[in-house]
Length: 294
Image (cartoon, rainbow, N blue to C red; front, side):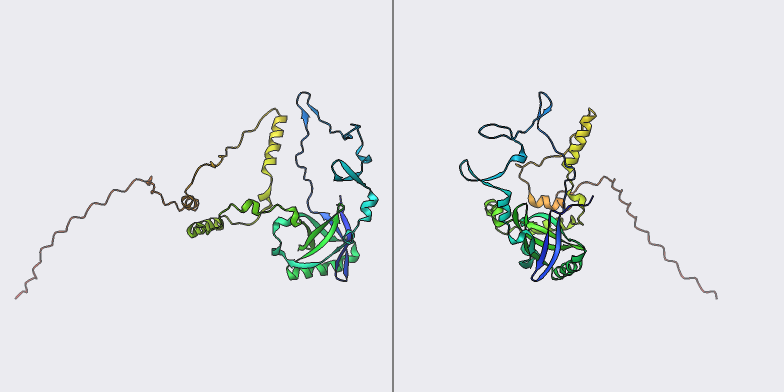
């Protein structure tokens, strides 16, 4: 089944425009979903939409959106109101500037979308824009309205296409200083840093999508299947680190690298008996030279 776009419009770079469509880059893979159950009856709990004052039960399709401008007082906004507030980026994704990709910290990344040409007519223009962005190694910054909210997006090449990453605003992020201020800023022990760097290099490898699989959900599925069969599963034997234990960091780093400087272990192999000393050789008697015959 073909995926439906979540947005259609135009990608615009100066006077160049290209019809494009945005598609969600991820999907619900069938993650486990749980319902609230009354343990006494085994019945599912039903959430009721009701008026907070009259307690009248209402259908969601009959409800409208309201903004609380003061305590318990709302102004109603209709679909026409939202439509009249449309901005330019509602139908056009205009590139404002290009920046170095490394200049935007990954913490600003939110959701990702595939940005593809919308129809055959725009494929050639799309390919030119994609290759030009790829040649510069830059990220294009633009804006687009998704679900009635204008979002900044960073556009970068990916394979034959382009990917748009929605970006958080500065006000969306909690201040890192509130969390990191108490961390010592002094220089670490150079020898320890060297050992830790060697440990990182030893564990460096190629990224595999399996590296980010949800193992907890996999265990939950095992548990659910086992319970359906009237069985159980054995808990994993994993030792929790002792948070109160003070360790010798240098010793831990060396041990991790197999450089434990502790006492040498006795070899399990039996020691060979020392070779017997050679006795001093007796000097041979000097042989007299044969007499010459007369």
